[in-house]
Amino acid sequence: MNYKHILVTVDSSEESKLLIDKAVMIAKDADAELSFISADEVYRVDHHNIIGLTPNQAQADKAESMEFLAKLEALKDSAGYPVKNILICSDSITSEIEKAIKEEGVDLLVCSHHHDFWHSQFSGAAKLMKAVNVDMFVVSVK
Image 1 (cartoon, rainbow, N blue to C red):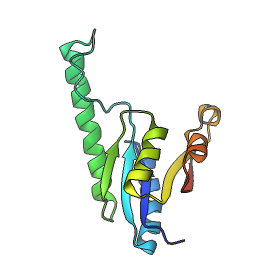
Image 2 (cartoon, rainbow, N blue to C red):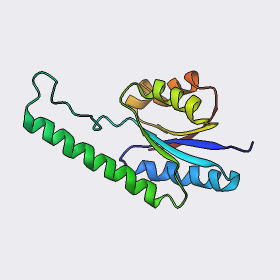
Image 3 (cartoon, helix red, strand yellow):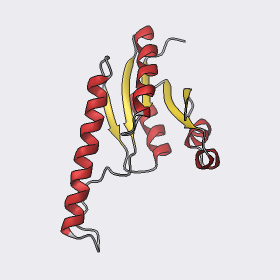
């Protein structure tokens, strides 16, 4: 199949580089567009209106968010292939990926699967397989 738009699930970990490298190989071969999506919990919008959040906590959240965004930009810069979009989720990752697939015309989703106890019990890849109607490339990571 000749893919047109590949969406890669990324976070700020080193494992994302592996996913990106594999997605870039496919994208180059297919001359496809490439986008990233992330739902890292660190990413936050302005939380000053949340009860109980002190200005120091809000400042720390903002600093963490800026650091996270910088890491995503670094992943984009190191991809060695043009990245169309970096999408950041603030909601459920599964529903945001479904939405991105529809809105961005994605036809291949690249994600990871971890082989440890917790990931085997609560696999995000398994949930995605049930939710999306596009091809998936699941990369095994340790």
